Image 1 (cartoon, rainbow, N blue to C red):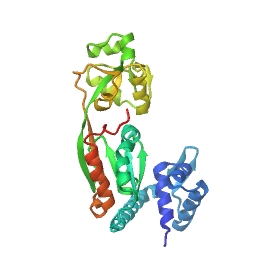
Image 2: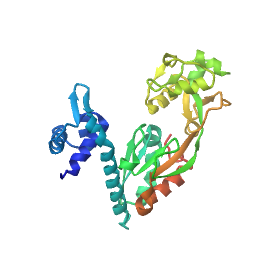
Image 3: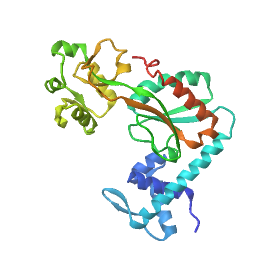
Image 4: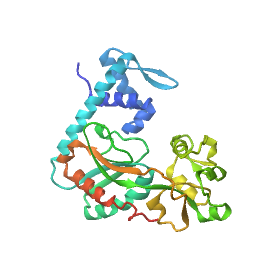
Length: 297
């Protein structure tokens, strides 16, 4: 049997995203086209890959058996593309960088401005997401991560640690006494997350037990939480280096042993073949040693 590569790619996207609509957005295709690809592939195979329902597209047992193989095929194709594009010596083309909300929206544009000015033939795409990008399937060329990457076949480079602390705007501290201990935080307005429980666990490690409603301001968008602290709503975590650029934001409980974030750069191991990706990696590694220098404040 002969299969269309596009149909296999569509099958993998539908399996990954769970619906024709979500897969169509990921692939930049129309929803009817995605549905037609699945129908044609099922006709070619002679069995169904998905059950259709109100909750989306669910893999059948046979479909589930094929997902891993389709993923391997995507990875092999991505390897071919990386090596082939790396054989081009001219420093031009597109580099896609994945980063979380804070780095991607607040820090990265200022960092790459200098590089783009010096390399006008390079185009930069920034994917801003707190989800982990799959570098093995070419979701991005370079990922900036706050933890050590563990995927096989990746080249990872630790750039530095980013210290964190608890901060409040001076206007908030003008209305409330500054906390002198972790226990005092229970009487303060805390800026925290909505559905993400990680901050609750972090406070728990300091001995302060919090329920989700322990945060009077809740949002899973990091930039909104930063701005909530800057607006004087309450006390919340910030990058120490970033907060140092805002003289009206004050660190509270500075001796609290808040763990630092690890700042890593990662890319596929085939980067050694691609001159432009290697150039961007080296540039970012140097610039991210002082990540807040290009931050507008």
